[in-house]
Amino acid sequence: CALNDQCGFFDFQYSSLSPGVAFNQLLESGAVTEQTAVTERKAAFSLDHLIEHEIVAYPDHIKIDVDGIEFRSIKGMERLL
Image 1 (cartoon, rainbow, N blue to C red):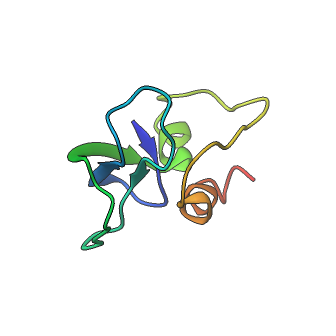
Image 2: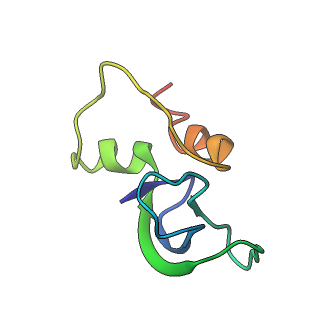
Image 3: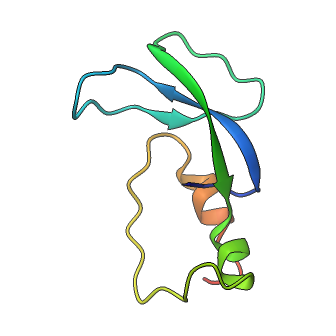
């Protein structure tokens, strides 16, 4: 699943289908981008939600490697941080 500041299903944009290509991202509702090879729906959850519902354990460390939604990913772990 993708990490986000809210839970639900969101469009996930692949800028290319070539292996190792960057700039694939979870889009905000209603967002439109120019360089989309394929878009699919993905489940997304906040890390706080996953911890509260005991789906994942409290992490010892966090590495963030996302393209374009860094703020939303961090906002979804406010209680943890």
